[in-house]
Length: 347
Ligand code: DOR
Ligand code: ZN
Image 1: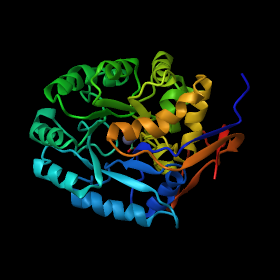
Image 2: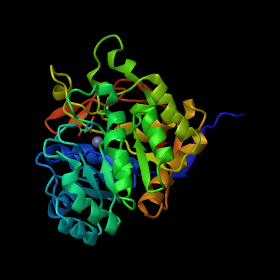
Image 3: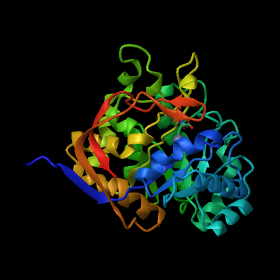
């Protein structure tokens, strides 16, 4: 078969993105706006985006940070706490601008201290979400300190997620940034109202990348990278074109100093070359023909939104990444800083 030199696909969306706030917003958003038509914006700011009003104000700040002429559409979320009210859910749906509610188990990751301490505290709210069709977006990791960090996703699926899917038979659920064969299996066996996002790092790397010749803080994210067998299981589901897996970068910029530190933050900044990273992973798996569904069709189908009307072109051409990008008064180091990719988005 001849190698493919150019790939034209419907414009993709990012169904899981962190763009932060304040003076770095204008340095974060344009990377995504260049590639994606829409992105689901995570609410784990400090303080978190817990109300509809805060989400709509945050949306305005994101729109203000866009380059001139950009049509990028931020799809907003609110942060679920033990006290989020069913009334807030009604408001969220009525706003027409909020596409989901994010569940962070308290203590699971960056800025999750305000998260849910016991899922049962949120049942009336989940009931309202089920009734009104608003999806629950889940950071799926058990937080008990006794659980091994590499088992946290699997334990969460067994102890919390499977019971939740049964308890709320109409609730739409996205298991975000999946990292294990167990998560793949869970989604395959779950009803159609359950989907999952997949990051570039979890299909390009395994946990060896954390310790390649030394400690690699820029490969540290949560959920943490897993064994090669897990990477392969995720990539297999994508290569077979399973419709309930879709693109969510979880691009999560932190200032260089906060990553390269004695206690480095979790988060991988993939936004500058996100679609190119995915193209590389799909090509390695011999599945470039499945990239468009994963990146541009499966997500809208799950969320009940139209697909984008325009197209992008990826060309087989080397793309060099800089060592860092501006990030407010600091710098942010991207995934594969100073390295190369073999695909390039043609502007
Ligand atoms: O690695 C991560 N970074 N995982 C998360 O869940 C949060 C994110 C962030 O906001 O930095
Ligand atoms: Zn995230």
